[in-house]
Image 1 (cartoon, one colour):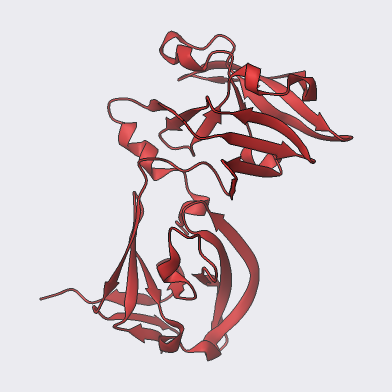
Image 2 (cartoon, helix red, strand yellow):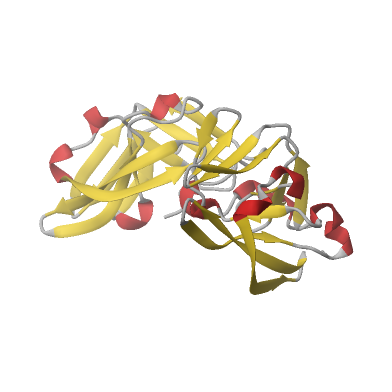
Length: 257
């Protein structure tokens, strides 16, 4: 599955040819919360975009509550940044081991991140940009999501059955990813859908719910997803179904003659 909530930030790939890493100063107030404590509160973050990886905020040490951090012996090496040191974050009796890292003496090309701290996104409880909570990872400023209505026919087939057919689809074009075709529920045969416990988060679209397909005893696990309440920036796809082309027999999209 190649939804953006499970793949590296595609926008960063634009730097891969001439420059593997780019740094973008952020003017947003960025905060990270762990066990009710504000670990970082900054208006001076640097957003690091690296080919093949999700965007990461690097914060000046003055904007981090260093009293909540304890250095560890863990260390890693990156050929593009240098040697990283790590810290464990502890608040209210709860700890996140090696949750923060810093390149104390990065390679010369990465001098701007020297001494700044970054945090594993999933090890913090909440992240905010200004007063709005954000999910998944920071957004890449070069990443776009565009939704366009199309009368081109989209047809989904599994087990010899047409599961969905529409000329009222919404085509979603996302930087670096294949197009996705969102189909209104009226044009999907709901008798083949089986609710799944799986969910996922996309920082550009919101939280997705999943369904499996069952057709004549054949099951395609988590082959369909939908955003019941997408983020305000992507409202048009609310409630529409999207099918994973790798989990159905055919996903056919009409090509204009």
